[in-house]
Image 1 (cartoon, one colour):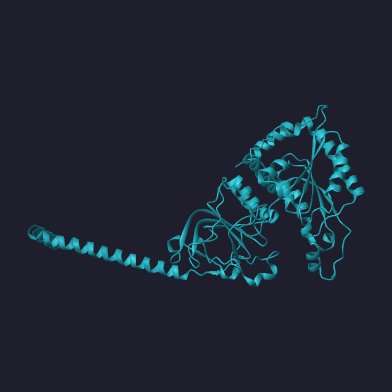
Image 2: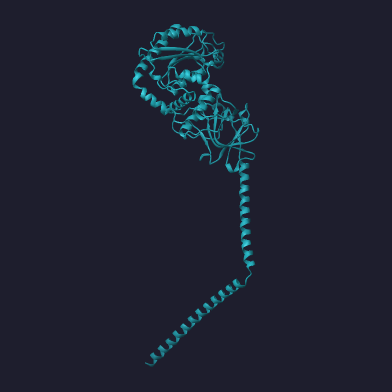
Length: 480
């Protein structure tokens, strides 16, 4: 019992000592923390405001130095990007042999954007260009290797670069922008691209042939583009021979209409036809309903003549043949016009009011664009074209198809001098290219009779049924 009492007393004293130690530890901790706060408060109370001002200034200075260093880094990186811009020749001679059939030699390091049934194109800036702008340098008109291109970010354009704002159309052609046919093939893809992109219009055009700068379009091509886009400005890069020019936005076409689907070609030519008629103040309403006093549909036949090369040797005889056949068909009216004598709008008016055009092979046939769809085309060639002209002689067959016309065949003159070097195709074509076209009275008469009869039947079928649809189609054609 005594032992138990002594144990309990010992435990009680031990517990008391532990509690005392704990209280002492807490007291020391609280005292130390209180002393620390007193020191801090004393420092705050008796420290000079100037000390805090120095601290704030120090922080501001550090921030300023950081900003300065950051700006220096940005400036240094921008300078490096400027100096890293690499200009490459516009004309890459490595692809000379495939310039028209394979990899293009114009801006050869870049790949086109391809969309189903659309013309291939390049657009800058874009994801493909990593946001970089297109830049050109040089304005040589005889050697495309002396002109160059590069890509650069807008924030780091090459030194002395001139930024041309707005949208720029860059048109490259292996041929030229002055010939009606070749020029149309080169610029038509831009019309289609615009149709797909909210009818955007360019601030300027840049033209290249084999990488060589061109500073003008042919008058006919320029006026056609003006009907759709308004004023046409062709860039000359005349603010210095070696000054880089960069474009805020640019569309580049290098392959003409090669990948454009048939339906999109038809839509493009429908728009150009509609715009040209509107520009020239021509209203085609009611054209399909034209009838004579006996209620017979009117058929308008136009002989579209040319002077010089590939003209008819005896235009009077050819005119008489067609006039005679036209007189046999009730409602047929024939006109004979010289394409050289017609202004742009005169050509639009004549072909708008033509159902059948008969003409020697030549650029003037590009005016078939202005006829209504399903109109007819008859074409004549000089001696030697069938044998030596190659596929190029079918250009207006292709155009008739692309614009919705019906090419009614062609006649190749079999009579004339023979090529002195028949084994050399190119030399023989050059020999025959600008020859004149003869005639075959029997063949021409039968051919004209067949085409007139076909058009007469088509007109009779369409006289009442299609007019409402035609007017609706015309209204949809001018989409831009």
